[in-house]
Amino acid sequence: MKRIGVLTGGGDCPGLNAAIRAIVRTAVGLHGWEVLGFRDGWRGVMRGDVRELTVESVQGILHRGGTILGSSGANPYHEGGIERVRTTFRDLGIEGLIAIGGEGTLGAAAHMSEEGLAVVGVPKTIDNDLSGTDSCIGYHTAVQVATDAIDRLHTTAESHNRLMLVEVMGRSAGWIALAAGLAGGADMILIPERPFDVDEICAHVRRRHLRGHSFSIVVVAEGAVPVEGTFELPEYPTDERGFPRFGGIAHHLAPVLEQRTGFESRVTVLGHVQRGGAPCAEDRILATRLAIAATDLVEAGRWGQMVGVRGPDIVDVPLGEAARIRRVPEELYRVAEVFFDT
Ligand code: F6P
Image (cartoon, rainbow, N blue to C red; front, side, top):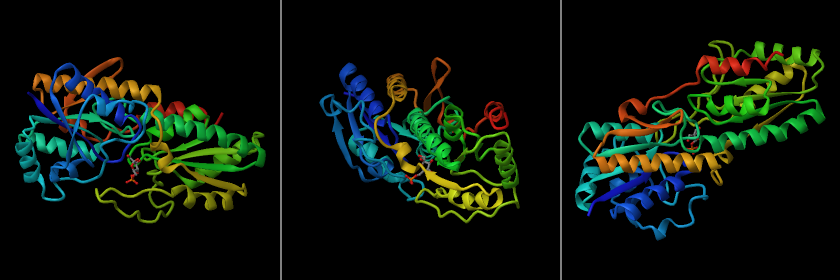
């Protein structure tokens, strides 16, 4: 009987359980294989820490946020554990593994695949910044959470004539800021792809007020950067994966904007609220489709690929190409810009 493994790695997001459920229902329910779920991402693979996933064990999880397998940023390449990964595959008799993850998890998967290990990838990250797919599991839910927050902030901003800064996630790419800002009618959106100039933000806010608006909403991606030499941001500490631990840029900007414009400012940092709770319908469907496509790749023995979505189609691309950062294109930012100054 065929036996495969599955893991969820990196930051969690809504829709992971929908993906695990679809893998198990297809692999066990349809094909009669065995599926072992590794605990806490690559850490579980290095330690051989598994539980068997049965059709019964994935009942009732479709709508649940988080991941029943747990997750971590552990990376065998940072911890000298690639031999342990091989040993686990051998000891457990695993033919191959489905890794559900973002840049870090799938980057490791890409290396392993080059070294001859049988891995297939499924893209997840609320940041939505992986190449090889139009969207990643979790992104749509995060955008909805951020949009709902912006809607709520609008009414209180208006009542108090305030400048509201809303900080959303997005380490290297501003997909959430852009989408939620567009959907929520933001007056300005700051993303990593477009370095900001504080003078320009102030001038823009003043123009809005001169045109009769009494408040402004500025959406800031956590990884936004100033035009070089125009504004000092503190160094961010790094996490276990070596990525900067962002959070708080809006707190640095707000007092400066308030002082220069004279408009009272307030900050909301949405943080992990964007990653928690139930997945929206779109993420459940995306996770289900991607998971089934990944299981199909396993069945066909097409290792080393990541499944993705392109328009209406499910596609697959080599893991090495997929685990690269995909940034917001200029033309999409221009759509948002139309609403900054009109
Ligand atoms: O999953 C991506 C992400 O949500 C980033 O946007 C954010 O910077 C990071 O994860 C936060 O990770 P952690 O849960 O380790 O604080």
